[in-house]
Length: 144
Image 1 (cartoon, rainbow, N blue to C red):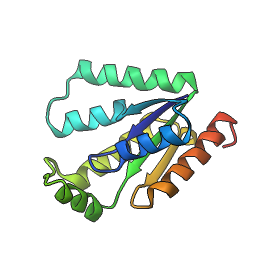
Image 2: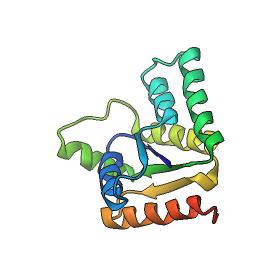
Image 3: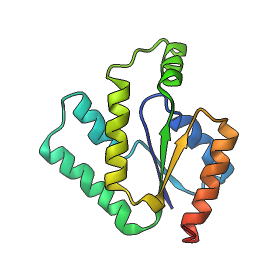
Image 4: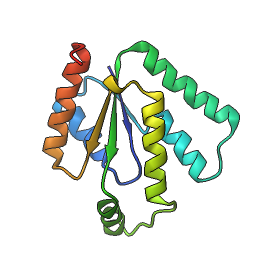
């Protein structure tokens, strides 16, 4: 199964990826930031091109058509994202709130809702991994 992690910087994607891989004994193919994320970031940094967006859309469609995927859409409240950035002495190079709105729109547009787990990563890592594993089982068994 393909697992695509989507979400803005400091939303917890990488941390959850590693914890999920350990919890599932590295049995899935995991992608850090899928095509929707690249489209949104390209727009925010004014580097999007028609051809580039077509490539991202094509990649998303390949995942959709396979039916063998799960999108983990990592979100975190704005205040926590800013705290996480500050902990790493980083600044956000874009309008975080606007970016989150764009991300929401695109995730809901390109991915089937049955194959998306929208996850508030301000919860504990253990709880987040539990929710991901539960959703993985639902998708694999078509229990949605």
